[in-house]
Image 1 (cartoon, one colour):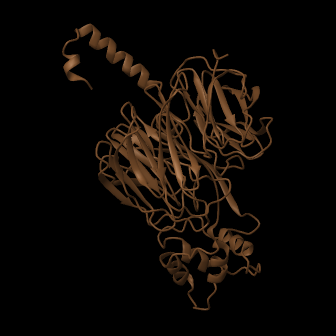
Image 2 (cartoon, helix red, strand yellow):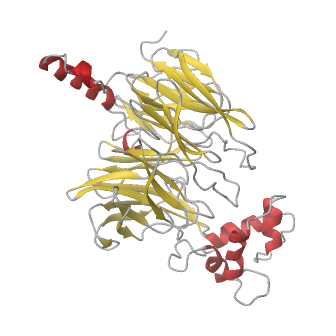
Image 3 (cartoon, helix red, strand yellow):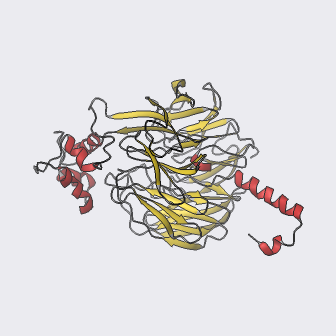
Length: 498
């Protein structure tokens, strides 16, 4: 980074500096769910078991509304929040003291209505030693100097459209010299690789055969090299991260996926719950002002559900595609023809008595072409997975937690239960995914209760801790500290605090 200075240093000091940087980088939590989106901290420093919004608190900061997760790189923590209805703030603080290093307010322009549980500050930044990479739906992707907050580049991307008003929620991840970003929305689903230095789009992959998904890409290390693995409608797909070329796919998934897989030792682990597209649209029609529960969908019902904002013509063309007999109604198979790609009908109509499917799956990377038969190690139907909370893979076990505070754990060798459908003593909704460090697992409920589990083959609740307000963001772990982003605050807890 500073060649003229390095030339003046002796060999021993260079090696010492290199070792220090490597150690610091290894302890970072640089993107959504930390290293490779795994949720597992690489630092071995002790972490607290018991804490609250006032006990074991190293520091806290007031933020605007948001549910994007904090990230930590090179001793800095980054997080965003909505200052007002058209201003998002990206903030950088010293990771150990909480002192604000800089904050930058960004004018977003008018923003669409989104689901109440979401926030317009919903995406998680990614960071390295020099830059923080931040995405916002109306602003695109940008890189800011990590030390000063100055914007170094900004790349416009298509503004996402979500007919169900879920809103944006995807975040960038980092691979070598690239920023990788997936946006499977209702109009222009695609994956992008941007040059970290310039923001130029290095490659773009059209994902037009996908319905809406919220699953982040992960790197799978294989004997033939790294693969960029992305879950989506019907398929788990492996890409060449350098070129975007599709290498393989496995037809193992459902209509959509909101959970992010975990890659470990060349194997990708997935948990998901997803309903059929027909059921989803009919439920939407029933909730509209003109809905009548007749098992059919009209354009008027779609528009009534959305409200005053006109549904784009490009999306309404899908309705026309499915209306085979031209009677102005979609029913039965017509719903699937309308809203699913002709060559990717995964997650089509389901029995009304069984509106959703749930699976846990393990797929080995490194294949080529259709690997559905050759590389799927196991796939089990299970009531365990949640539709939002991602799995945690640690110690040869796969932990999943779902609404109601119900946990299940599976052996990663064969997917067989270690324990099944057991409560973790915090009934409520869950949006944050579990994270692990120092032999402990932290599970955050929407109600702000953090359940601490022992990382082991038996369910052992060590503590229940109250953060004082709602929390939907997955916490970050770095250098013996845990960073919780509640709805309006950033709270740093540590064993040695107080």
